[in-house]
Length: 304
Image 1 (tube, helix red, strand yellow):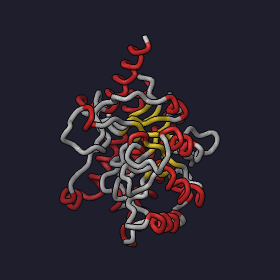
Image 2: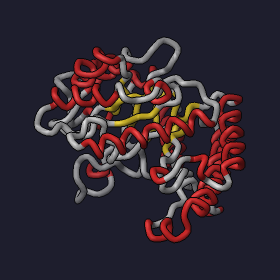
Image 3: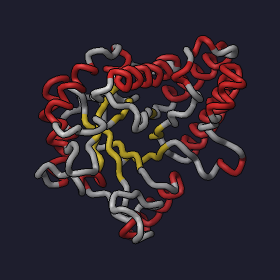
Image 4: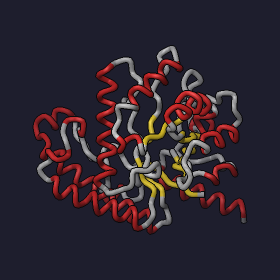
C-alpha cells in the first residue's frame, strides 16, 4: 500500500520550510508580480526540499500546494521578472520527480467550479486548471493521470443531471494538458455526487477517472457498499496508472465532538481496508506526515 500526504511538511516547518508563502490583495497591488515571483521561487525551492525529505523517508506520494504561485490568476508565468529562474527550478523539480518515480499532483480549491451557472465562475475555473496544468508541463511531467488535477463537481444547483451536463460542456473547453490529468472526486454530502453518480454522469460520457474518498463515501454512498464504490472508482482509471484515493478519519468521533461529522481528524484512527491496496492513497489528516508515520507505526505494532 502506497501512502502519501498533502501540501505541508510539519517536520520541516520549524526550519522555515514552506510551499505556500502568499500575500494579501493589498500587498499584491503594492508590490505586484515582482514580489509574487520572489515568493513563488522561494516556495519552489522549499518544495524540492520537501520532496528530498519524502524520498529520504520512503514517501513517494505528495499533493503539492495550489499556493505555489501567489495570485497566479492575475498574471502569466512569463510575466514574472524572475521567470527564467522559476523555469529552471520547475525543471529541476520535475527531473527529481521522474528520477525517483514520485507521484505528485494538485487539488485546486473549492472555487474551481466547472459547472457553475455563472460564466465568470466557469472562466475563472478554467483559468485555474490551465495554470495548474502549466506548472506540471513546465516541470516536464508527462500528461497522464499519474500527475493529476483532482477536483469536485462543486455543487448540484438543485439538479445533479443538468449540472453534470454543464460540467461536460466546460470540460470540452479545456486544453489537452488539463484533460489528460483531470480527475473527479466523490462528495461528502448526500445531496451531491456519489461514485455512482460520477460514473454514470461523467465517466461514461467523457472517460474522466474517479478518485475514491473513503471518508466521503460514508456520507454519500449512492446505494453502494464501500467495496463496491471503491472497485467502481478504480475501474475508471486506465491501465498502467494506479487509481488514486483519499483516506481520513472523523474528527468528531475521535478528537472533538463539537465539530460537524464531515470534519477530518488530525490523525488516522481507522485501519485502511484491504481494498485500499489497489490505490495510491493520500492521507487527508491535519497532522500530515506525522499522521502517516503514526499510522504505519501503529499498524506495525498491531501486527507484531
